Image (cartoon, rainbow, N blue to C red; front, side):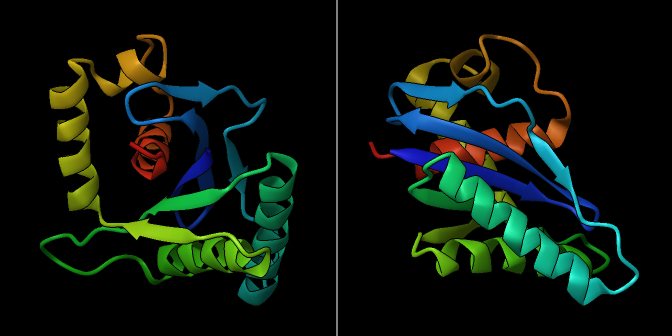
Amino acid sequence: MRVLGVCTSPEDIKWALASGTNDAPHLEGTDRKSQRLPDSEDETLKLIGLVRFVSTLLKEKQVEKVVIASAGYSPFRGPSPARVKVECAVQLAAAEIGLPAELVAAATLRAKEKRLVEETGHSPEELLNQSKEFSPRAWRDAAIAAWVGLPK
């Protein structure tokens, strides 16, 4: 199974493509791991451009499932409305071509990361990135999200 893990921001998306199983995951190399939102003053046009980009990416990479690290809450306010819209654009792109898309809350992602370490005895870097640090940091969350979507 090929799973695309996605971490969003109001300006871009970061992604990681994983295949295999939870026990034997493989993070597939891609020439790019992020995409800025299209330049436009009109937010609607930015989101339409993002839906088109993600739809094309999903088809080209033959993705079977999408897992999105959803925006978390801070003690002071909820998630950024722009980030939530970007998450929605990714969900729409997946739905448009008939793929399941799952939102995983930040707290759940951290719990799954802890489970990954307990079950495998390896850090996400060791298991998914050949012991190298993830850079940028959001790519790490995208990789963990992709791992979460893999079958057992």
